[in-house]
Length: 165
Image 1 (cartoon, rainbow, N blue to C red):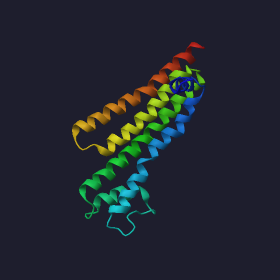
Image 2: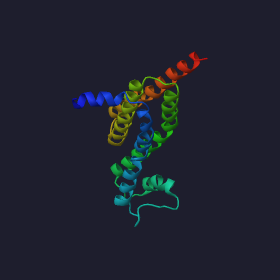
Image 3: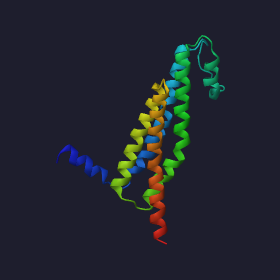
């Protein structure tokens, strides 16, 4: 069996999509350590990071006049990617759980799960790297493509569950 055939066979495995739940959590978390490293490396503060009130680190970094503006912008964008990821977690979690409860086609759920994880990684990368409106628009397009995936699963699951009576 060729690697391609093994990969396709893997996509037909039941409940594989459930592994996307921790994977998507990871995509939401991953901007945070990058943001923290930038604060540590570039802040005028000896520690560069305050763990007493860690949610204020981004705003403190923005006020730090010794911080190069390009670094301050990257910190702000990483914070945005981090928050956006966690804001979208409940939607994805609900979609995957309901999709499995409704016994949607394994291949469809698994392909959408893999696509969503990859899309969220691309979203984070674009969020971090964007420097102009065109790049910001591209990031928004990726967001809405990703957003359509859990919505599709939710509506499809609702239809299946409703049909069961």
